Every structure is written in C-alpha cells, then in structure tokens.
Image 1 (cartoon, rainbow over the protein chains, first blue to last red):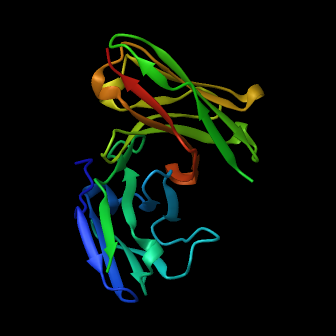
Image 2 (tube, chains in turn red, brown):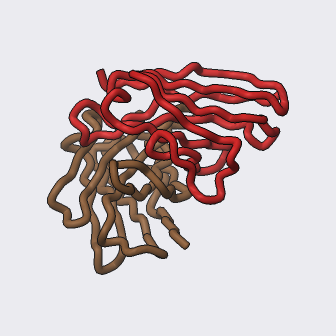
Image 3 (cartoon, rainbow over the protein chains, first blue to last red):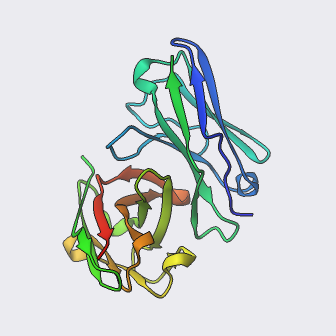
Length: 108
Length: 118
C-alpha cells in the first residue's frame, strides 16, 4: 500500500507533550519527513530523514519511527505550533512521493 | 538563501492549458531533483511530479499522467509544469519543491493558484 494515514485532528495543552503519528507500509522501507503548514502559508519542513531537524527548527520538535509508524513529537507545545502537520514518504516503487492526509494540531 | 518562486497560475477554462514556472536561486539548481506538489482548497498536499537533474527521469501521479509534463531548464534555473486538458479537480495551489537525497523535500516555494472553471 502507498497510503499514509494520520489522525485528522489532535489537541494539546500549552506546554505539554503531543505526538502526531503517521502509519503506512512504505515507512518500513523509506524515511519520513514532517511538514508544518499554517493557514495561507507554504509548508515548512520540521523533520527530515525521520529524525533530523533542519537548522532553525526549535529543538522541541523531534521525530521517530517504529515499524510502519512514524511519529512527530512536540515537547512543550507553544501557541505558534498550532498548524496542520503532514507526513511524507515514498510509495512502494520508491519513485513517487506520498503525503498523509494531515493532522490539525490545536494548542489549548 | 534558497528561493523558489512560482508563477503562471490563474483562471483557466475546463479543457484548457497553462504552463507554470518556478524560478530557483541560492543553490546549484542543476544538482537537484525537483518536484511539483499541489493542494486543493481546504484539502491536503498531493504530490504531482518529479524530475531528475538531467531530465532523464520523470514521474507523475496517476491522475495527471498523459496530461501534465514536468520539465526544466538548468541554464535558466527554472522548473516548469505544462498542464493540458485541465479539469475542475485540478484546481489547487501548485508548489514547487526541491528534493534532497532520498526524495525528501527540503525547500518549498510559496505556490501559485490554478483555478479551473468556466
């Protein structure tokens, strides 16, 4: 299967920990990345190669993977983290990109 | 600083054509795979097409195969998407993106809106 499944919405209290997950068979073989998108803006990479954080991304963002599930964890969620988060990987051919449906994070 | 700037979007009639452009700067463009990704209004991200640095490999999502063509001009640091036989369901913001090793996106453009309507 080339699908990536995400929960549509997740909420977290300000300053608490939240984990956003992405499930799909291709995650057993290919890296995941995570892309943050705020309304009216282009996406922004927050995690690449499953666990790596680009320069300029706060260290409260971290990534992990186990089996067919990749996770994005925000440790100490801030109000500015409220956004949609999309996971991305490849399909079984390795040549096509695949996105999850996105998770909208609400910071309470 | 890496910059990707899309242009060419607008209102197009069903069955019509449009060519999107993406101007790249701030990096050695001819060394990178590039991609187009789209987002329909209120929806998620959908990958559209990839192209290798030397234009020898192209890949497309099934829904645009035989209608869209991705291309590039390394001398002009530009990426293109020729879109033919447009349908209402092609209405979306189209983003240009740079691929790093492993087909991971590391930079996004700001996007250009294509609206297909009569």
